[in-house]
Length: 425
Image (cartoon, helix red, strand yellow):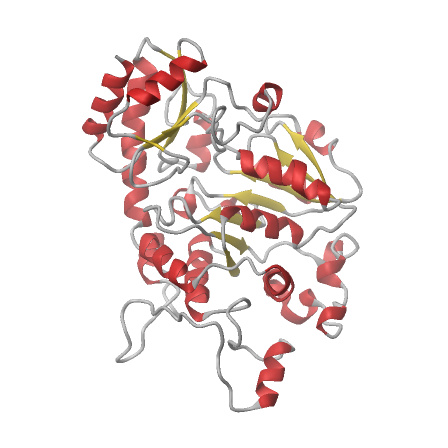
């Protein structure tokens, strides 16, 4: 019986095992296409009757090895890499939705995802209802319709730092006959594995902690293999009825637990092509090898910074679930007992301009759109990432106009604190 590796070892070892005489580092297969001597063999690949590589838009060895590592880290049966985290969330939903369908999502989600679900999907004929993740089961269930196909939330919300009650959301989703999709970008599988709490599909912006160095933009969709699509066959015809674009193939019947993942590749990647370059996947893998070490340091540093901000009279409020008086503390202890992430949300006493002056006074800390990087960086969402939202929409999304998102890096924490202290002064 093969020994199951722990998460730290999976970060280093999963996805690629070199054979005798092969390179220890995962190779970059930077090729668009693959040669075959036999025409029939190529035909079988196109019919999904045989496994292999023929065109990188559908599959590439480097991409697949990194995807296998992320699947192992999350405890899923399959993973598909995408060209961005936004693409991952789009594909995760669009793989089971079409025009005339509907989804329900927490309102405390990243502004880009809020726009994707509330504006862009609507143009494709897919409606979205936003709910408070702290609402009762009955209130959330009231948002469901007969054509609802998924429930969505973020493990730790960006930028509000609220912790999702995954068990509650999973209970509601399954009672309503749909999968729970959880964006696990901020927690990463090092600090939380949503499948263990009932989630069915997990997404990531691999641009963030998984990469950790701001070197590549990417995303991932991971399937647990646990949702019974056939039990709700009438809701998910794309998975449970023949696909005429693939000679009448029925994905769940042909591929079992890999049906969702196979459809995502064979249909969505075939037609939309939002793939990462193999070079980007290689860079992502370098980040994954140290993910377990970096997450521990991010959390250690962020805890110190959150405590300092919490006790400073110039700070109006702080959201970080590692603080005992935080509204999400108990939920954080349940789902994230080893630490949450390095992102802190806080507000200063004053107005919006006070936040801007503070950020402009920082010397070491970067003002950057990025988050979850080795370098400490800061952002004012109302002025930057979420500026497309009205004040009313900002508040609905759990984002106060004075909210500052501080992504604490892995520098020496005393240097981070020194810069914050001088900027506050």
